Length: 112
Image (cartoon, rainbow, N blue to C red; front, top):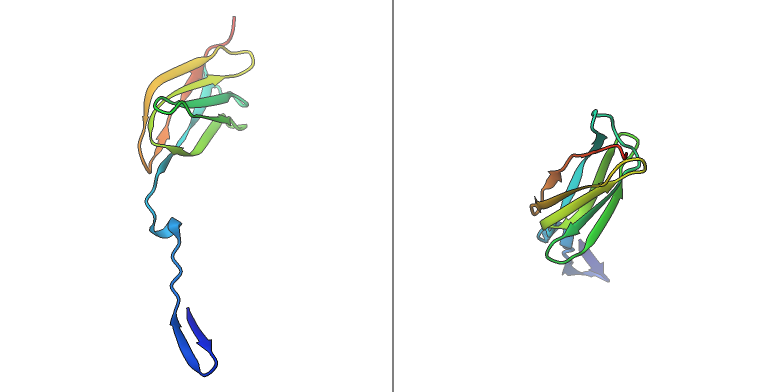
């Protein structure tokens, strides 16, 4: 941007955004929750727990059984899914890689 003050030019002002010039520090996690027959499970709750920091991130599946957790730090996670009428499923030692979207599909068993 060129600034003008009075009769002379002050100079150039460069605006830099951290989003443009910064380094990525996070990742995304997505997937589908279904039952044993392959039918989608809407409204399932997912909890992703970072093994190194114990930070937890949650999401809920949409009407298509899809969940998405954005902007989580890279690292090893355990993911737990649960829904009314179903048992709980937990997947351990899932590696989430920096600046990538990991896809983790989970199947739930009907509760007896």
